[in-house]
Image 1 (cartoon, rainbow, N blue to C red):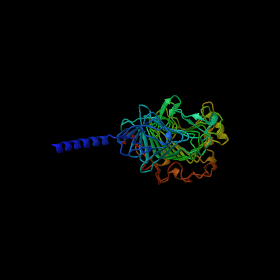
Image 2 (image 1 turned 90 degrees about the vertical axis):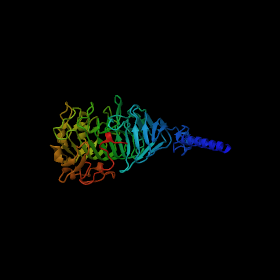
Image 3 (image 1 turned 120 degrees about the vertical axis):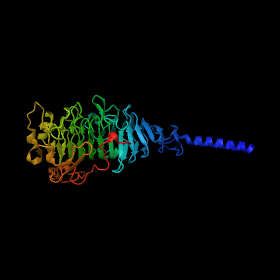
Image 4 (image 1 turned 30 degrees about the vertical axis):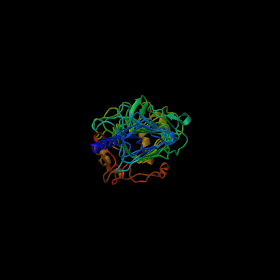
Length: 475
Protein backbone atom coordinates (compact mmCIF):
# COMPACT_ATOMS: atom_id res chain seq x y z
CA UNK A 1 0.00 0.00 0.00
CA UNK A 2 2.87 2.32 0.88
CA UNK A 3 4.57 1.74 -2.47
CA UNK A 4 1.29 2.36 -4.28
CA UNK A 5 0.83 5.66 -2.46
CA UNK A 6 4.35 6.78 -3.32
CA UNK A 7 3.78 5.80 -6.93
CA UNK A 8 0.59 7.87 -7.14
CA UNK A 9 2.28 10.85 -5.50
CA UNK A 10 5.11 10.61 -8.00
CA UNK A 11 2.68 10.58 -10.91
CA UNK A 12 0.77 13.59 -9.57
CA UNK A 13 4.00 15.49 -8.96
CA UNK A 14 5.17 14.71 -12.48
CA UNK A 15 1.89 15.92 -13.93
CA UNK A 16 2.16 19.12 -11.91
CA UNK A 17 5.72 19.73 -13.04
CA UNK A 18 4.81 19.00 -16.66
CA UNK A 19 1.84 21.35 -16.50
CA UNK A 20 3.99 24.02 -14.89
CA UNK A 21 6.66 23.71 -17.58
CA UNK A 22 4.04 23.95 -20.32
CA UNK A 23 2.71 27.22 -18.94
CA UNK A 24 5.97 28.62 -17.63
CA UNK A 25 6.09 32.40 -17.56
CA UNK A 26 9.20 34.41 -18.25
CA UNK A 27 10.66 36.80 -20.76
CA UNK A 28 10.02 35.50 -24.28
CA UNK A 29 11.79 38.34 -26.10
CA UNK A 30 15.18 37.18 -27.47
CA UNK A 31 16.40 40.79 -27.47
CA UNK A 32 16.03 41.12 -23.71
CA UNK A 33 18.85 40.54 -21.23
CA UNK A 34 16.75 38.01 -19.28
CA UNK A 35 15.35 36.12 -22.26
CA UNK A 36 14.20 32.65 -21.15
CA UNK A 37 14.14 30.18 -24.07
CA UNK A 38 12.07 27.75 -22.00
CA UNK A 39 9.31 30.27 -21.23
CA UNK A 40 5.97 29.65 -22.92
CA UNK A 41 4.21 32.93 -22.10
CA UNK A 42 5.64 36.37 -21.44
CA UNK A 43 5.49 37.75 -17.93
CA UNK A 44 6.02 41.29 -19.21
CA UNK A 45 9.13 41.66 -17.01
CA UNK A 46 11.76 41.72 -19.74
CA UNK A 47 14.89 43.68 -18.92
CA UNK A 48 16.66 45.65 -21.64
CA UNK A 49 20.09 47.27 -21.86
CA UNK A 50 20.25 50.64 -20.09
CA UNK A 51 16.59 50.20 -19.13
CA UNK A 52 15.54 51.64 -22.47
CA UNK A 53 11.84 51.81 -23.22
CA UNK A 54 10.64 48.84 -25.19
CA UNK A 55 7.59 47.80 -27.19
CA UNK A 56 4.64 46.22 -25.42
CA UNK A 57 4.28 42.72 -26.83
CA UNK A 58 1.34 40.34 -26.70
CA UNK A 59 1.90 36.84 -28.02
CA UNK A 60 -0.72 34.43 -29.33
CA UNK A 61 0.89 31.36 -30.86
CA UNK A 62 3.20 32.55 -33.63
CA UNK A 63 1.64 36.02 -33.76
CA UNK A 64 2.98 38.94 -31.72
CA UNK A 65 1.06 42.20 -31.40
CA UNK A 66 3.40 45.18 -31.11
CA UNK A 67 2.41 48.46 -29.44
CA UNK A 68 4.07 51.58 -28.12
CA UNK A 69 7.64 52.81 -28.26
CA UNK A 70 11.08 51.23 -28.45
CA UNK A 71 14.32 53.02 -27.72
CA UNK A 72 16.30 49.77 -27.72
CA UNK A 73 17.30 47.49 -30.57
CA UNK A 74 14.64 44.98 -31.55
CA UNK A 75 14.28 42.21 -34.10
CA UNK A 76 11.32 40.83 -36.02
CA UNK A 77 11.87 37.13 -36.75
CA UNK A 78 10.82 35.35 -39.91
CA UNK A 79 8.97 32.58 -38.07
CA UNK A 80 6.70 35.07 -36.29
CA UNK A 81 3.91 37.27 -37.69
CA UNK A 82 3.85 40.77 -36.20
CA UNK A 83 0.77 42.98 -35.87
CA UNK A 84 1.21 46.74 -35.53
CA UNK A 85 -1.40 48.19 -33.18
CA UNK A 86 -1.75 51.98 -33.21
CA UNK A 87 1.30 54.18 -33.78
CA UNK A 88 4.40 52.07 -33.16
CA UNK A 89 7.57 54.15 -32.77
CA UNK A 90 11.26 53.35 -33.00
CA UNK A 91 12.90 56.21 -31.12
CA UNK A 92 16.38 57.72 -31.47
CA UNK A 93 19.12 55.21 -30.76
CA UNK A 94 16.94 52.19 -31.51
CA UNK A 95 17.38 49.86 -34.48
CA UNK A 96 14.55 47.68 -35.72
CA UNK A 97 15.91 44.73 -37.70
CA UNK A 98 13.44 42.69 -39.76
CA UNK A 99 14.42 39.26 -41.05
CA UNK A 100 13.99 38.46 -44.74
CA UNK A 101 10.64 36.76 -45.31
CA UNK A 102 8.94 38.32 -42.27
CA UNK A 103 5.26 39.34 -42.50
CA UNK A 104 4.09 42.43 -40.60
CA UNK A 105 0.36 43.23 -40.52
CA UNK A 106 -1.32 46.52 -39.72
CA UNK A 107 -4.27 46.44 -37.32
CA UNK A 108 -7.29 47.98 -39.05
CA UNK A 109 -9.23 49.29 -36.05
CA UNK A 110 -6.27 51.22 -34.63
CA UNK A 111 -4.79 52.08 -38.05
CA UNK A 112 -1.50 50.52 -37.05
CA UNK A 113 1.57 52.35 -38.39
CA UNK A 114 5.33 52.04 -38.02
CA UNK A 115 7.27 55.27 -37.44
CA UNK A 116 11.07 55.27 -37.62
CA UNK A 117 12.06 58.51 -35.86
CA UNK A 118 15.13 60.67 -36.38
CA UNK A 119 18.24 59.03 -35.04
CA UNK A 120 16.80 55.51 -35.25
CA UNK A 121 17.05 52.95 -38.05
CA UNK A 122 15.08 50.25 -39.81
CA UNK A 123 17.05 47.37 -41.30
CA UNK A 124 14.45 45.69 -43.50
CA UNK A 125 16.61 43.80 -45.96
CA UNK A 126 14.61 41.13 -47.72
CA UNK A 127 15.71 39.16 -50.75
CA UNK A 128 14.12 38.41 -54.10
CA UNK A 129 13.28 34.92 -52.82
CA UNK A 130 12.16 36.13 -49.38
CA UNK A 131 10.76 39.68 -49.51
CA UNK A 132 9.58 41.40 -46.34
CA UNK A 133 5.84 42.09 -46.46
CA UNK A 134 3.86 44.80 -44.68
CA UNK A 135 0.19 44.11 -45.31
CA UNK A 136 -3.36 44.35 -44.03
CA UNK A 137 -4.40 42.43 -40.95
CA UNK A 138 -7.71 41.60 -42.61
CA UNK A 139 -8.50 38.17 -44.03
CA UNK A 140 -7.88 37.31 -47.69
CA UNK A 141 -10.70 38.71 -49.78
CA UNK A 142 -11.55 41.40 -47.19
CA UNK A 143 -8.46 43.59 -47.61
CA UNK A 144 -8.92 47.09 -48.98
CA UNK A 145 -7.31 50.47 -49.47
CA UNK A 146 -6.25 52.14 -46.24
CA UNK A 147 -6.67 49.14 -43.95
CA UNK A 148 -3.71 50.43 -41.91
CA UNK A 149 -1.46 53.46 -41.72
CA UNK A 150 1.86 52.79 -43.39
CA UNK A 151 5.63 53.02 -42.96
CA UNK A 152 7.05 56.44 -42.06
CA UNK A 153 10.80 57.06 -41.93
CA UNK A 154 12.12 60.37 -40.55
CA UNK A 155 15.71 61.53 -40.87
CA UNK A 156 18.11 64.39 -40.21
CA UNK A 157 18.72 65.50 -43.81
CA UNK A 158 18.00 69.04 -45.05
CA UNK A 159 14.56 70.39 -45.96
CA UNK A 160 13.32 73.83 -47.01
CA UNK A 161 11.02 74.20 -44.00
CA UNK A 162 11.47 77.11 -41.57
CA UNK A 163 14.15 76.14 -39.08
CA UNK A 164 14.89 73.09 -41.28
CA UNK A 165 12.43 71.02 -39.26
CA UNK A 166 8.83 69.95 -39.50
CA UNK A 167 6.18 67.57 -38.23
CA UNK A 168 5.62 64.71 -40.61
CA UNK A 169 2.10 64.40 -41.99
CA UNK A 170 -0.21 61.85 -40.46
CA UNK A 171 -0.70 63.01 -36.88
CA UNK A 172 2.17 60.99 -35.46
CA UNK A 173 3.95 63.93 -33.83
CA UNK A 174 7.27 62.80 -35.34
CA UNK A 175 9.77 65.45 -36.40
CA UNK A 176 11.99 65.35 -39.48
CA UNK A 177 14.75 67.43 -41.00
CA UNK A 178 18.24 68.54 -40.07
CA UNK A 179 21.63 69.33 -41.57
CA UNK A 180 23.10 65.89 -42.34
CA UNK A 181 22.63 65.05 -46.01
CA UNK A 182 24.46 61.74 -45.43
CA UNK A 183 22.14 60.70 -42.60
CA UNK A 184 21.49 56.96 -42.44
CA UNK A 185 18.01 55.70 -41.54
CA UNK A 186 18.78 52.11 -42.50
CA UNK A 187 17.82 49.77 -45.34
CA UNK A 188 14.50 49.11 -47.08
CA UNK A 189 15.17 46.48 -49.73
CA UNK A 190 12.93 43.84 -51.30
CA UNK A 191 9.97 45.09 -49.32
CA UNK A 192 6.27 45.06 -50.20
CA UNK A 193 3.80 47.46 -48.55
CA UNK A 194 0.15 46.61 -49.20
CA UNK A 195 -3.22 48.25 -48.30
CA UNK A 196 -1.63 51.08 -46.31
CA UNK A 197 -2.29 54.80 -46.70
CA UNK A 198 -4.98 56.70 -44.81
CA UNK A 199 -6.23 60.30 -44.65
CA UNK A 200 -5.65 60.52 -40.91
CA UNK A 201 -6.78 64.17 -40.90
CA UNK A 202 -7.37 66.76 -43.67
CA UNK A 203 -3.97 67.39 -45.29
CA UNK A 204 -2.48 64.96 -42.77
CA UNK A 205 -2.32 61.75 -44.75
CA UNK A 206 -0.21 58.70 -44.11
CA UNK A 207 1.19 57.30 -47.36
CA UNK A 208 2.27 53.79 -48.25
CA UNK A 209 5.89 54.83 -47.70
CA UNK A 210 6.77 58.27 -46.35
CA UNK A 211 10.42 59.34 -46.47
CA UNK A 212 10.81 62.61 -44.56
CA UNK A 213 14.21 64.26 -44.31
CA UNK A 214 15.89 60.95 -45.10
CA UNK A 215 19.56 61.12 -45.99
CA UNK A 216 21.79 59.60 -48.65
CA UNK A 217 23.19 57.02 -46.24
CA UNK A 218 19.85 55.19 -46.39
CA UNK A 219 19.22 52.38 -48.90
CA UNK A 220 15.80 52.20 -50.58
CA UNK A 221 15.50 49.77 -53.48
CA UNK A 222 13.19 47.04 -54.76
CA UNK A 223 10.03 48.28 -53.07
CA UNK A 224 6.45 47.60 -54.19
CA UNK A 225 3.57 49.70 -52.84
CA UNK A 226 0.17 48.19 -53.69
CA UNK A 227 -3.36 49.47 -53.08
CA UNK A 228 -2.23 52.51 -51.10
CA UNK A 229 -5.13 54.60 -49.82
CA UNK A 230 -3.18 57.81 -50.38
CA UNK A 231 0.10 58.46 -52.23
CA UNK A 232 2.17 55.36 -52.78
CA UNK A 233 5.45 57.20 -52.10
CA UNK A 234 6.03 60.69 -50.77
CA UNK A 235 9.32 62.42 -50.07
CA UNK A 236 9.43 65.46 -47.79
CA UNK A 237 12.87 66.98 -48.18
CA UNK A 238 15.97 64.87 -47.72
CA UNK A 239 18.40 63.43 -50.24
CA UNK A 240 17.83 59.67 -50.15
CA UNK A 241 18.48 57.90 -53.46
CA UNK A 242 16.03 55.19 -54.56
CA UNK A 243 15.84 52.59 -57.31
CA UNK A 244 13.51 49.87 -58.57
CA UNK A 245 10.26 51.20 -57.12
CA UNK A 246 6.77 49.98 -58.03
CA UNK A 247 3.47 51.76 -57.44
CA UNK A 248 0.57 49.39 -58.13
CA UNK A 249 -3.11 50.39 -58.23
CA UNK A 250 -2.68 53.34 -55.87
CA UNK A 251 -5.44 55.75 -54.86
CA UNK A 252 -3.81 59.18 -55.09
CA UNK A 253 -0.39 60.05 -56.55
CA UNK A 254 2.26 57.47 -57.32
CA UNK A 255 5.40 59.55 -56.64
CA UNK A 256 5.04 62.82 -54.70
CA UNK A 257 8.00 65.12 -53.93
CA UNK A 258 7.96 68.16 -51.61
CA UNK A 259 9.92 70.41 -49.21
CA UNK A 260 13.26 70.45 -51.00
CA UNK A 261 13.67 66.76 -51.82
CA UNK A 262 16.70 66.33 -54.10
CA UNK A 263 17.44 62.62 -54.32
CA UNK A 264 18.41 60.55 -57.36
CA UNK A 265 15.98 57.89 -58.61
CA UNK A 266 16.12 55.29 -61.37
CA UNK A 267 13.90 52.45 -62.58
CA UNK A 268 10.42 53.33 -61.35
CA UNK A 269 7.12 51.97 -62.65
CA UNK A 270 3.50 52.81 -61.85
CA UNK A 271 0.34 51.05 -63.02
CA UNK A 272 -3.11 52.51 -62.31
CA UNK A 273 -6.56 50.98 -61.89
CA UNK A 274 -8.91 52.98 -64.18
CA UNK A 275 -11.69 52.89 -61.57
CA UNK A 276 -9.68 54.08 -58.54
CA UNK A 277 -8.63 57.70 -58.08
CA UNK A 278 -8.71 60.41 -55.43
CA UNK A 279 -11.09 63.37 -55.20
CA UNK A 280 -8.03 65.65 -55.05
CA UNK A 281 -7.05 64.40 -58.56
CA UNK A 282 -4.67 61.49 -59.03
CA UNK A 283 -1.37 61.90 -60.84
CA UNK A 284 1.68 59.83 -61.66
CA UNK A 285 4.12 62.48 -60.42
CA UNK A 286 3.12 65.38 -58.23
CA UNK A 287 5.82 67.84 -57.23
CA UNK A 288 5.94 71.10 -55.24
CA UNK A 289 8.75 73.16 -53.83
CA UNK A 290 6.59 73.53 -50.74
CA UNK A 291 2.89 73.87 -49.92
CA UNK A 292 3.00 77.66 -50.35
CA UNK A 293 4.95 77.61 -53.60
CA UNK A 294 7.69 79.72 -52.04
CA UNK A 295 11.27 80.05 -53.24
CA UNK A 296 12.66 78.51 -50.06
CA UNK A 297 15.83 76.50 -50.50
CA UNK A 298 16.88 73.82 -51.05
CA UNK A 299 14.56 73.56 -54.03
CA UNK A 300 12.60 70.42 -54.69
CA UNK A 301 14.82 69.12 -57.50
CA UNK A 302 14.84 65.30 -57.61
CA UNK A 303 16.50 63.68 -60.62
CA UNK A 304 14.49 60.83 -62.14
CA UNK A 305 15.63 58.55 -64.93
CA UNK A 306 14.05 55.49 -66.54
CA UNK A 307 10.51 55.90 -65.26
CA UNK A 308 7.46 54.17 -66.77
CA UNK A 309 4.08 55.68 -65.87
CA UNK A 310 1.12 53.60 -67.06
CA UNK A 311 -2.07 55.57 -66.59
CA UNK A 312 -5.69 54.41 -66.45
CA UNK A 313 -6.59 54.74 -70.15
CA UNK A 314 -5.47 51.32 -71.34
CA UNK A 315 -6.88 51.34 -74.87
CA UNK A 316 -7.85 54.91 -75.65
CA UNK A 317 -11.51 54.01 -75.07
CA UNK A 318 -11.21 52.66 -71.51
CA UNK A 319 -13.80 54.03 -69.07
CA UNK A 320 -11.73 56.05 -66.61
CA UNK A 321 -12.55 57.72 -63.30
CA UNK A 322 -13.05 61.46 -63.82
CA UNK A 323 -10.75 62.06 -60.85
CA UNK A 324 -7.63 61.12 -62.79
CA UNK A 325 -5.56 64.00 -64.07
CA UNK A 326 -1.92 64.04 -65.16
CA UNK A 327 1.04 61.78 -65.73
CA UNK A 328 3.51 64.46 -64.58
CA UNK A 329 1.95 67.27 -62.52
CA UNK A 330 4.46 70.03 -61.70
CA UNK A 331 3.52 73.09 -59.68
CA UNK A 332 4.53 75.52 -56.89
CA UNK A 333 8.05 76.18 -58.22
CA UNK A 334 9.12 72.54 -58.50
CA UNK A 335 12.50 72.05 -60.20
CA UNK A 336 12.07 68.34 -60.92
CA UNK A 337 14.25 66.68 -63.56
CA UNK A 338 12.99 63.74 -65.67
CA UNK A 339 15.02 61.82 -68.24
CA UNK A 340 14.76 58.69 -70.38
CA UNK A 341 11.17 57.99 -69.40
CA UNK A 342 7.68 57.24 -70.73
CA UNK A 343 4.28 58.68 -69.75
CA UNK A 344 1.30 56.87 -71.23
CA UNK A 345 -2.44 56.47 -70.87
CA UNK A 346 -3.31 59.56 -68.77
CA UNK A 347 -5.99 62.19 -69.43
CA UNK A 348 -3.10 64.69 -69.49
CA UNK A 349 0.51 63.86 -70.18
CA UNK A 350 2.31 66.88 -68.72
CA UNK A 351 0.97 69.79 -66.66
CA UNK A 352 3.06 72.75 -65.52
CA UNK A 353 1.41 75.37 -63.31
CA UNK A 354 1.68 79.05 -64.23
CA UNK A 355 3.78 79.79 -61.13
CA UNK A 356 6.30 77.19 -62.28
CA UNK A 357 6.72 78.18 -65.93
CA UNK A 358 9.75 80.32 -65.07
CA UNK A 359 11.61 77.14 -64.14
CA UNK A 360 11.05 75.91 -67.70
CA UNK A 361 12.62 79.06 -69.13
CA UNK A 362 15.67 79.05 -66.85
CA UNK A 363 16.12 75.29 -67.34
CA UNK A 364 15.95 74.37 -63.67
CA UNK A 365 12.97 72.15 -64.54
CA UNK A 366 14.04 69.65 -67.20
CA UNK A 367 12.42 66.83 -69.17
CA UNK A 368 14.58 65.13 -71.80
CA UNK A 369 14.64 61.92 -73.86
CA UNK A 370 11.07 61.20 -72.74
CA UNK A 371 8.01 59.93 -74.60
CA UNK A 372 4.38 60.91 -74.02
CA UNK A 373 1.98 58.38 -75.58
CA UNK A 374 -1.73 57.67 -75.65
CA UNK A 375 -2.80 60.70 -73.59
CA UNK A 376 -6.09 62.44 -74.34
CA UNK A 377 -4.30 65.78 -73.97
CA UNK A 378 -0.54 65.81 -74.16
CA UNK A 379 0.08 69.20 -72.51
CA UNK A 380 -1.90 71.29 -70.03
CA UNK A 381 -1.38 74.69 -68.43
CA UNK A 382 -3.43 77.03 -66.24
CA UNK A 383 -6.42 78.68 -67.92
CA UNK A 384 -4.84 82.10 -67.37
CA UNK A 385 -1.57 81.10 -69.02
CA UNK A 386 -0.57 81.34 -72.66
CA UNK A 387 2.69 79.41 -72.31
CA UNK A 388 3.50 77.11 -75.25
CA UNK A 389 4.33 73.97 -73.29
CA UNK A 390 4.27 71.82 -76.41
CA UNK A 391 6.96 73.95 -78.02
CA UNK A 392 9.10 73.73 -74.91
CA UNK A 393 8.72 69.94 -74.69
CA UNK A 394 9.39 69.43 -78.39
CA UNK A 395 12.53 71.59 -78.55
CA UNK A 396 14.96 69.50 -80.59
CA UNK A 397 17.73 69.63 -78.00
CA UNK A 398 15.48 67.91 -75.46
CA UNK A 399 14.97 64.90 -77.73
CA UNK A 400 11.43 64.27 -76.47
CA UNK A 401 8.62 62.80 -78.57
CA UNK A 402 4.86 62.31 -78.63
CA UNK A 403 3.03 59.18 -79.86
CA UNK A 404 -0.68 59.02 -80.51
CA UNK A 405 -1.39 55.61 -79.01
CA UNK A 406 -0.24 53.36 -76.20
CA UNK A 407 0.16 50.58 -78.74
CA UNK A 408 2.80 52.63 -80.57
CA UNK A 409 5.15 51.82 -77.69
CA UNK A 410 5.07 48.11 -78.62
CA UNK A 411 4.97 46.72 -75.09
CA UNK A 412 4.16 43.15 -74.07
CA UNK A 413 1.23 43.57 -71.64
CA UNK A 414 1.84 46.60 -69.38
CA UNK A 415 -1.80 47.36 -68.50
CA UNK A 416 -2.67 43.89 -67.21
CA UNK A 417 -3.90 44.41 -63.63
CA UNK A 418 -3.35 40.81 -62.55
CA UNK A 419 -0.12 39.89 -64.33
CA UNK A 420 1.51 42.93 -65.97
CA UNK A 421 4.47 42.49 -68.27
CA UNK A 422 6.25 45.79 -68.87
CA UNK A 423 8.87 44.47 -71.29
CA UNK A 424 9.25 46.26 -74.64
CA UNK A 425 8.89 44.05 -77.69
CA UNK A 426 11.44 44.01 -80.54
CA UNK A 427 11.20 47.25 -82.47
CA UNK A 428 9.81 49.26 -79.53
CA UNK A 429 10.88 52.92 -79.56
CA UNK A 430 11.75 52.47 -75.87
CA UNK A 431 14.63 50.10 -76.58
CA UNK A 432 16.98 52.86 -77.70
CA UNK A 433 17.60 56.57 -77.49
CA UNK A 434 18.40 57.03 -73.80
CA UNK A 435 21.10 59.54 -72.99
CA UNK A 436 23.13 60.24 -69.85
CA UNK A 437 25.05 63.20 -71.22
CA UNK A 438 23.17 65.68 -69.02
CA UNK A 439 25.35 66.68 -66.09
CA UNK A 440 22.51 65.87 -63.69
CA UNK A 441 22.99 62.21 -64.62
CA UNK A 442 26.75 62.13 -64.12
CA UNK A 443 26.49 60.66 -60.61
CA UNK A 444 27.70 57.05 -60.39
CA UNK A 445 24.34 56.14 -58.86
CA UNK A 446 22.82 56.02 -62.35
CA UNK A 447 23.22 52.96 -64.53
CA UNK A 448 23.92 54.26 -68.01
CA UNK A 449 21.53 52.10 -70.02
CA UNK A 450 20.49 52.55 -73.65
CA UNK A 451 16.72 52.13 -73.19
CA UNK A 452 13.98 54.51 -72.07
CA UNK A 453 11.55 53.61 -69.34
CA UNK A 454 12.17 51.19 -66.51
CA UNK A 455 12.70 48.00 -68.55
CA UNK A 456 14.81 46.64 -71.34
CA UNK A 457 13.64 43.83 -73.59
CA UNK A 458 15.30 41.04 -71.63
CA UNK A 459 15.51 41.47 -67.88
CA UNK A 460 12.36 41.83 -65.79
CA UNK A 461 13.43 43.05 -62.35
CA UNK A 462 9.88 42.65 -60.96
CA UNK A 463 9.93 38.87 -61.19
CA UNK A 464 10.15 36.69 -58.10
CA UNK A 465 9.52 39.17 -55.29
CA UNK A 466 6.40 41.12 -56.33
CA UNK A 467 2.74 40.23 -55.77
CA UNK A 468 0.01 41.35 -58.16
CA UNK A 469 -2.83 39.76 -56.16
CA UNK A 470 -2.25 40.68 -52.51
CA UNK A 471 -5.98 40.77 -51.81
CA UNK A 472 -6.20 37.00 -51.90
CA UNK A 473 -2.77 35.95 -50.69
CA UNK A 474 -2.68 33.82 -47.55
CA UNK A 475 0.04 35.11 -45.22
